[in-house]
Image (cartoon, rainbow, N blue to C red):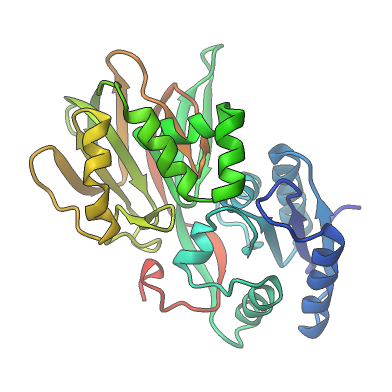
Length: 327
């Protein structure tokens, strides 16, 4: 059945990295909404495309909010179905591997507490709904047409994206992710850095002339964290109308060697390291295209531009004082 006006819609991702049974989670969603005097609708989806379509239906029906019950990839799938300016607010039930959005916005870690806190924000009891920025990646399809994909957290090129692709493309690394969780990405990055050369690209920021360079890592962040342990964009907020870029030039191993500094929120501008803010970034590949990831999933190798979308998404923020929210 399709969502109805003013309902709270929950999208369950059975593939998310958690052991909570769907029946148990469904009961929690209904119980939290009943306590808040709200009607709940719980929908299990099998693919990101189904989640995107459910979000589109929730928007069309005028649902009050839609919650992604899974990880950051689930939230990304829902974001694709919510048009810019949708009044249907996005909420999160953190059940994935890293749960970066929940971490950055200080959401409670248990499903019942997370849902209840965000419903309180929806009703203005504690916190409030907040309009936040998103990013948009433009790419070219095989037939020459233009594709777009929005992101809430971060897109990257180079070593980080190679680590993500390595996990997705390797059954052994995938098993390691299920066992270790987030540290599996670091181990994948170490494997990907060995023997790799830098990727030659040309970069244009906010319409300036393209500058040629070779990158080991380029991150574009709407938020601060790469995972929950590397703060690559320590000054980023989702309410400033801009995106933050970190570019590490040289071979990928150099970005890996600098990661302890990002662990301690200290990766300043210097030789081969650039931090800046922008509204539009263009990237042209001058050789082998660097791998690309968008909100934790492999992205298109033909991506050529990234735009900031100021105030494009309504989210539920029970703790609006968190730094990434401008607090």
